[in-house]
Structure formats: C-alpha cells, structure tokens
Amino acid sequence: MSELTSLTIAQAREKLNAGEITSVELTEAYLSVIDAANESLNTYVVVTADKARKMAKASDERRAGGTIGGLEGIPLGIKDLFATRGIHTQACSHILDDFKPEYESTVTQNLWDDGAVMLGKLNMDEFAMGSSNETSYYGPVKNPWREQGSNTALVPGGSSGGSASSVAAHLCAGATATDTGGSIRQPAAFTGTVGIKPTYGRCSRWGIAAFASSLDQAGPISRDLRDAAIMLKSMASVDAKDTTSVDLPVPDYEASIGKSVKGMKIGIPKEYRVDGMPEEIEALWQKGIEWYRDAGAEIVDISLPHTKYALPTYYIVAPAEASSNLARYDGVRYGLRETGSDITDMYEKTRATGFGHEVRRRILIGTYVLSSGYYDAYYLRAQKVRTLIKRDFETAFADGIDAILTPATPSSAFAIGDEEMAADPVKMYLNDVFTVTVNMAGLPGISVPAGLDNKGLPLGLQLIGKPFAEEELFQASHVIEQAAGKFEAEKWW
Image (cartoon, rainbow, N blue to C red; front, side):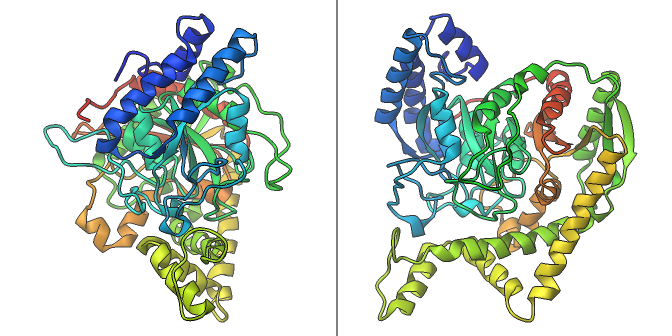
C-alpha cells in the first residue's frame, strides 16, 4: 500500500484542500496498486483508468477555480450493480454480456456531481444473490484477511464482496454497495470495514439493477465511520425517477460523530442469541454492551418476538421479487443471446446459459411461491409476517429505545469453496440471520469493526436505528470504533 492510498477519505480531503496533493496524484497511486493487486484479489471486473485520469484532471481544474464538492477528487470503486453511462454494467452476470447503459444511476451521478473519481466497476455476487461473492460470473473475490498462520483464501462476504475487499485492501478510498438482506453489513464485518445500509428510501434505487425492489438499498462501504458519513451524504437524495425515495433533507452525518451517547437507550434483543452461536460472537456482543455502559448509555433488554421467522420470510419475499425483476433478461434487446429454433427456445437457452446456479435457484423458488395455488400459502403469508417483524421494531422504538445492538454475523469469514456451504444452501443463507430483519422492516443498520476472533479475523457489531435516524447510528457507532481501535489485514497480495 502506498502512502497516498493509506489515506482515509477525510485525510485525503484535508491534503487536497491544503494543496499538498492533487487528485491526479491520488488517482495514479490507486491505479498503480490496483494494477499490482487485482490479479490476486479479483475485486475489479473493469478498471476505468482513462476515465479516472480524465475525471481527476477535471477535479483539479475545478479546485483551482474555487469549486470544491463534498468528494472532490476522491477515487471510488463502484459495485457492478450500478449503471454507469457507456461503461460495463453487468451485475456480474453472463446474461448481461457487453451491456453498457446509455444512462447513469442516480447514486453514481450524485457522487460525480460532488467531484468523485471513478476507478472502475467492482466484483459482486451475480445480481447481488449470495453471501460470499462466489456466484459472480467473473469468479470469487478474495478477502485480504487470512487466518493466522494460514494461506487459505477466504471469502469477503457478499454480495458486495468486491466493494468490501477493495476498501480493506486500499484499492479505492471508498466504495458503493447495495444491501438487500445484509449485502453491505456482512461483507463489512468479514473485512474489518464500516458498512451502512440506510433507511429504505434514503438513496435512490434508479439505475441499480433490481434484485428485490422492496428490500434493495444503496449505501457505502468505507474504512471508518467518518468516511461512511461523508459518502452517504453525497449518495443520498430524493429522486423523481424513484417514487420510493423520500423527500427529506440529507443531514450532515459527519457532525454526529463524537457526540456523547449519555442517556441513550440501547436495546439488546434476546432473540438474537441463536442456537449454535459461537462463544466468541456472544463475548464480543457482551463487550459491546459494556462499552456502551461505560459511555453512559442505558442498556435495556428487549424482545423482537418474530425474529425467528425473518429468515424464512426473507427467502420467500426476496426470490418472489427477483423472479419478477429478472424476467426482463431474455436475450431479445441486450446482453447474451443464444440461438434457438424459435423464440421460446431462444428464451430458454439464453436464460439457462446466462444465469448462474444460485440465480436460477432463486428464480425457481420465487416463481413457485407466486404461482397459482401457492401464492396465498407462501407469499401472502410471508408479507403478513413481514408486517409483524416491522411492528416488533416499532414497539421497541415507541418504548424509548434509540438503537439496537446485535452481532453483525454468526461467524468470521470462511474459506472459498467451503464444502459445507456448497452442499447446503440453507447453511449459506444463515449468514444473513442477523441482518435480514433490518431490510424486512426498512430500517437503517450499520456494521462496525469490533474486534478479532481467535483466528485473527475481523468481527463486526451491528447497530439498528429508527427510520431515517442515520445520524443517531453514526453517533452511537463511534463508541464501538473508539473502544475497538483500528486493525488492518497484513499485506500478502
């Protein structure tokens, strides 16, 4: 890692503002480390070097003219789910081969309007379906972290594995990501980075390839809380093109960091003590509770009784929405097209070849639960349970709880190609056990690095907040960041 790429967004902003470095210098430093490391880590599927240099030069010119945006000159990586005009946008799927959209997603446009520089498109699970970044058409991403004394390649989590890994390995200053059931928070926990899934509607979904429209939400993955706050301020906005985006002012999230949590009520849900949870996860959770007590917060035991139904409910609702959203990929207008004897044969061959195994599985599940005779038994019932899960949170917050503290994941990162995970998809789905409730209820959630396990791998703690209370999450999360300290992967790549 070069000296320049070791700077956080906040530190780079300070040096850029002081005239100590230029955006062109910073961008070249990142392009250099990407060139050296990407073959080992596989975080980028496309590096947009020429565009990055052009954007950095334009940023330096704007700065010289006195125009300075919130992310002026900062080089970022973009998850391949976000549409970028004229640039590879495939959701890491074979079915979108060579697709280059003629439009820009609202979130990325917001970043460019604030002066950010695009380094390239980041690897991810195909159509954001996965918890390990092993379903990508471009192969798995490697986690920069390794177990002590081991060379075994570990997953970075998913679906935003490329985002998390590139941030942890300093291959970008920060990265965009999306979260449908934990796809920001779980990879952040696995890589020792900060990931925030904002409230549903805080960031526009326009121009982001849809997985499950009622659950998807964009957010940042960054090296620390301050960087996440800086990025989220730029990413968030109301958008006429997305009627689910909310017309509320975007606060200065940075200003919340460092404020006292004295008097805040932190809820501890008993239902998150799941069977078979490793002792290390429980011990870390207890440590987090003590950190809040020491900081003057009030710890309150709470109950979220419908939590046990969250995972099965999620894996009915999400695939149902996916089967509907992915019906548009048929080989007719863009992307992959296989030759068939007639149009139906062409559809079938294109989709069979273009979609990976996990995506096909979820389309089949989703189509089944929406089919005649099963809709009421599965999908409608799941939507009713979802309402009950949301009501559990509303009850807790109505009782004065300011934020809810839970583990982020049930374990640290596991090996790429783990046989147990490969043999049993449900075991893989259990990685989302602590995160899916937040998406079901549309709430904001953040994962903050909180410590290392006995193998030397990072673990995260999750804070769940009230709707549009991201400011309180940044305020409360600072306690964990200060108490846990900083830790980074030992360079091997």
